[in-house]
Image (tube, rainbow, N blue to C red; front, side, top):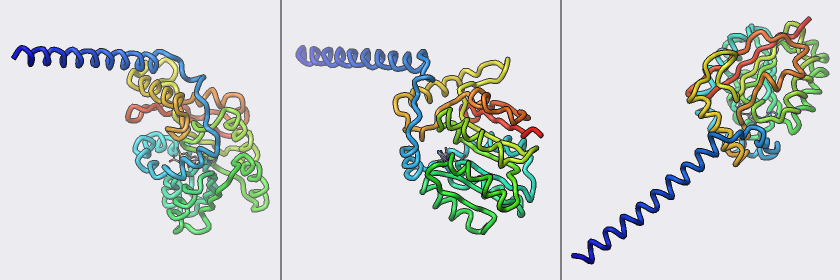
Length: 275
Ligand SMILES: C[S@@+](CC[C@H](N)C(=O)[O-])C[C@H]1O[C@@H](n2cnc3c(N)ncnc32)[C@H](O)[C@@H]1O
């Protein structure tokens, strides 16, 4: 009996030891996640890794769209898309937004640019029924494709009415974001619009109250992106307003907001090309 009692207390002291180790590890990891500034240490993964990631895991985007939809709906509303317009989408993913727009507007011309073969195949299938109204481009270098857009449109006597991109800028380096905005200057007509959504590193705009749970999501997302840049598809919360600032001269901001969707903060930006 004595022997059994001794065994019991040995077991409980081992359990106690491991509980302390577990709590200590949890405290250190939480401290690292929530008190360290990760933003400037996050590396954007190389394009080739991003391409492979979306080839393999792009099917998950249909689930992610539950979180994305509220912000995308607001962006589309503020973008004032009308029937007969020419819309360019940068990073069309599974072609969900393209399908919705082409269905709603029977005379809309849609041009999509993406780097993932998997996304291209899925979107091509999804948009088959729209024939020539949906032109999908699978490219290796999207900046070169953007540069080629003016020639493409001058040849066809068209100009771009709307340039849209949802949840792609947050996977790109700052220099690429600025290059893309610069390359829109010529093909987007005066009075045309750029309409964007992205994950954001701020949970509120201006003097609004910071949202505690959204700030926690930002911190966890940044910590994961820092530890493993490709694990979340290369997407990390960015300050979209700041990223756009230096190349935004051709545009006037007509709508800017941050919403929190299922705990995830999303920045929405709409600019109108100046005359
Ligand atoms: C997070 S998904 C968003 C897809 C879609 N816009 C949506 O909201 O569901 C990012 C998409 O951008 C594409 N992408 C990533 N880098 C790109 C680049 N440099 N040029 C064009 N597309 C890119 C990916 O292949 C992927 O389809």
